[in-house]
Image (cartoon, rainbow, N blue to C red):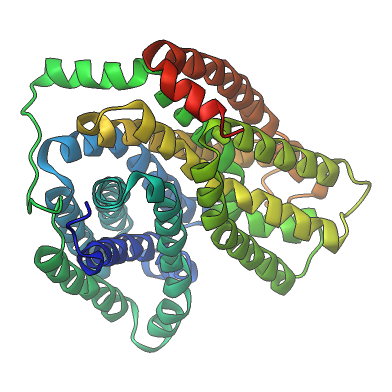
Length: 430
């Protein structure tokens, strides 16, 4: 690593980050196009929500296959395939003139999106020194989320002035630029443009995944990711705005500002958490347990508050909940320290699907409970209905916290058995 010029390291990282940022841009580009999509395809609100749920499901299901592909063919090849797939999918979405075709296009957007983050994490682990990896991974996650912010204003303007097809074609054309830069700049490793892993048949793949999953460190990372991410994801993705407006009586502008505050909290705390686990790796799970406890505590106060919660408390809610986003990234550091390099991407894929499955479960559960607690077929949800719906989070938190504690004990016991010297060294960082 010492022979690699810093300029080369950051050039690779910045281009890979740019591809990930573009993937988040494409993922989020429909968020500001809801009304336009409703008019273009003649769909209902529930059909519109299907776009979001379908993308989440595809993203989660793709994580393990993508991890295996990265371990076999390297980050550069898989990242290139993802960028090309995103470009083609957004082009198809631009020309889609029916709901089924639009859904199909978004499926492929989800697939292309799923092929980016794991590749970038693998590049970070390969190019940067181990002591810098946790911070760089947090920076990657935080800066990548700028894609969602960048998508908002330009896409709103474009849809209003250029129309559907031209707007999405321009968005798709960005993929051509990033794919070109990727092919010119990104290498899998300092001395290798394309890094290839050992060819594996189906039996070998199952064995590799089983080895990754059997390690308690991987399972600990899985449940950390599961437990920390879903609350912020669901608020930002679908239910935060209606909860704040109809459940807590805020104006639409105030609700929008609070969700923006949550994004700022996510971006501001990520690098800090990365630095913390770098100097205190022994306490990664302790940090996560503390963050989850804080999230549960604030939600409990808000949901049990008589009447509408005061604005200051809702600010605390979105800030504390937002911290759960970068806290979920700590799970990837468990993949790094619990698996050999040739299994790193597949282990990362196992962990990365956890939070998205939890988020998808919560998205669906909230919708079902709101319908259950709302008379007739009305969508005029009441504060009481939202209290019931948001309380489903306690089911997921309970499962996740029990599992984190279980595998925290098992992971430390495994480390003691495998490497007593490292065990003692990490404990000394208390």
